[in-house]
Length: 285
Image: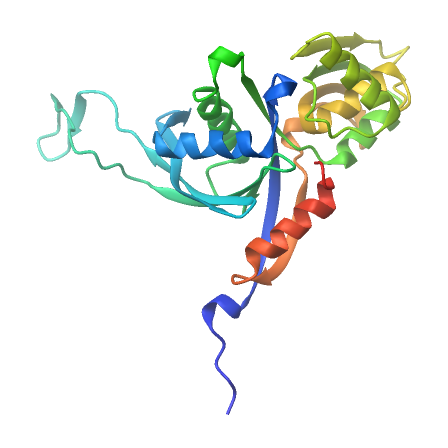
């Protein structure tokens, strides 16, 4: 007789995408402080309007040693007092007073404070963009103004798109939005720019570089502009106009998130995901 397999021991395949969280100023950056901010968002039941009438908040949150995990819920907040009565075929005044909301969808998330990365499981709605907006606005509501804290949450970009921008022979414009990192930059030019932003207390930088179709931009990795572009992978985003894959188009790195496949059991999901995140981003993120 075959031994029955418990549900939490069955193999599951998960797609994982990532958000990078950075707290400012640098003196406030610590795993403990990051975990405190997430716990506060949950405790205060902070809800954010992330799209149209869609609201997102943290439904559950827990900490297992140095690994935080929880569940997000996204639901519809019915607004307005003008409702259509299908039975009478008329528009009438109606005020919905129940604290219950339809179209609720749940999504698990995991946060590793030591590398300040959020892992989002699956592609089901709400979208990664909505979740980025939620964490950006929710965490911004719980920072300590007395210490001049602020936070930036960015989608971690697939490096393949950055390579396409570097290798494009017909790049006519490049728009870069960056902020300094959480001491997790190792490449020479990228690290040098990151250090300059920190030294001069520049929390956000926006730069635009323009060429023409006859004289396109030539971006090199080991250069000032190349270093800024590399910094956007975890700490901002880039918008490029030019020819990519044989077609002239405008591409945004926000639409090309880094993702990975995880094959494990529900029982071992947390431990395997933690290993995957550390292998992807290193001990310091």
